[in-house]
Amino acid sequence: MKHEQLATDILANVGGKENVSSVVHCVTRLRFKLKDESKANTEVLKNMDGVVTVMKSGGQYQVVIGNHVPDVYAAVLHVGNLGAESENSDSTSDEKMSMGAKFIDLISGVFQPILGVLAATGMIKGFAALILALGWVDATSGTYQLMNIAGDGLFTFLPIFLGYTAMKKFGGSPFIGMAIAAALVHPALSTLTTGEVSKVLFQGTVFESPIHITFLGIPVIMMSYASSVIPIILSTYVASRVEKALKKIIPDVVKTFVVPFFTIVIMVPLTFLAIGPISTWAGSLLGAATLWIYELSPLVAGLIIGGLWQVFVIFGLHWGLVPIAINNLTTLGYDPVLATTVMVCFAQIGAVLAVMLKTKNKNLKSLSVSSFISGIFGVTEPAIYGVTLPLKKPFIMSCIGGAVGGGIIGVATGKLWMFGGMGIFVFPAFIKPGSGLDMAFYGSIIALVAGFAVAFVLTYLFGGMNQEKSSNLTNETTSASKEVAATKVENEEVVSPLNGEVKALSEIADAAFSSGALGQGVAIEPSEGKLLAPVSGTVSALFPTNHAIGITTDSGADILIHIGMDTVQLEGRYFTAHTTQGEYVKKGQLLIEFDMEEIKKAGKPLTTPIVVTNLKEFNLELSKQKQVKTGDSLFTLGKK
Image (cartoon, rainbow, N blue to C red; front, top):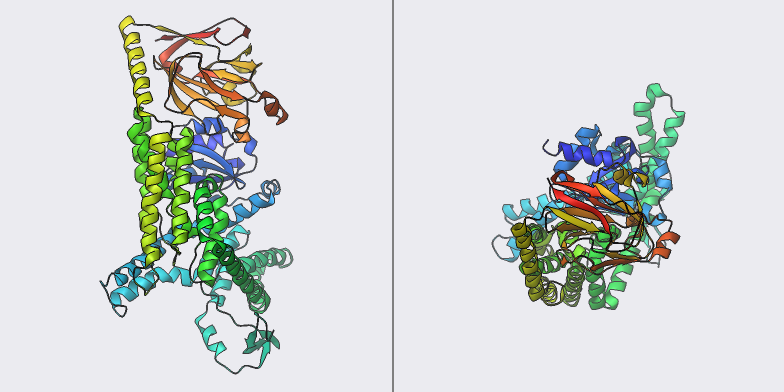
């Protein structure tokens, strides 16, 4: 339980365990659904050691942790005494969500729990296809067949897994969902389509269906539901409603077995008679529509999806494409959509490598190394939130590289033949089972190299990490440090970064600042939308939304400036940064411009705290001025 303290702090700052409706995790994030997001201390969490950043998207409050998120998740469950996946859902939180947010929340809730094992089994199947294509095994060998079965098993019986996760998401009994799904993939169903055809429904249309059996005299349209997605999700949705209705009317003494009995008896025939056929046809139409749009121009589709994929990931919108991809694998046998995105991670680490080689900031260089390694295996959140997005231009260059990679895969008609792994493990997924290595496979290799190279070169040349400038800044920093050391300067003046009225931190409505939890200092009610550097030092943090900035002074003091309250919710609107993370800035240099009128119209207070976050190392003496202009003294720091 080495993450116990971190888990305790996270729970405390999301409003306590009583504010948690549910919590799950993905590859790098804790995904909370909170009853009241206003109770969460977002800025405290963002500045917490062990937390990369915080995102609000798709109705979820996402705390980005990094590669060790499973351990932190386990600690959160333990510390908060929460059950697995903590499904203590509260309908009031759902009511506050938009339709789009509800859809993303639904999709992530249904598919996220199985994505890890789905990717793992896809990797097994992909490697089986790879060793067959390379001629290392024969298609009739036991080695190949067992590997293929191990990889194909989950996908074949996917409805059973989705029956569990979907039923749980809808608030029903998961094992009832599994029982309904098991009926849909029962082996005996294959024998029911070999008998005599009694009639043909919808003859002469695309929905033409031969009828082999009836249920209570009603024709049953037999279809294969192996690997299907939409039928079981719709079926469990209806089943959850049926189950809840039955629980209200059936006595408690027999509820344990009578409720499942009637739910299954009702839902299995209903699914075979109506829900299954209708949803299967809908899935086929969705797959055909997706393919039609894609084939209008695979190049354009690849450029757009590949270029915007990282933006989708940041806002959680990528979940909308996951069921489409899985449905395409079911109905078409392959998916061309996600195929255009799988090389984006290499464009991201191309930009990270350029930053790593160019920057003189030791912390940024160290972070770039770990982010690069994670990105090789497809985990790009540390790279996005820790390196490229704060620097802005490298993120843009990585998106351009992703567009180039996606466009090449589109031109090469690249397809994913299975739901494979991420990063370097995705390549076998481009091999059609039973076929050799074709142009689509080689196209994925070319896309990797091209996307990586484009992002690297553009970032190296135009990513705001100019080598000569970095050297000069480093020299300035070194000279300043030497000057401080030589003269033994013990006091450092922090001047006002804004024009306005000085206020005590205790007057701020935000408890994280008013309590001093984030540090000591003052607040300013600004009268002009320009923030200047209050000290000379290195920009140690520049938040992606440009509403907050951290500066480490030459004497080692960490200054945090937060423009306004709850302005992170504006998602960067009305803020323009004139510096980058890692840059050395001089006292009085313009850092950020912000539109005061628009921020006020959005209902956000403009009160701006300026605090020292490592005050244990310093003494702080406040100025007594109440009205200040930029450059006026705010407080003085002295080394303890």
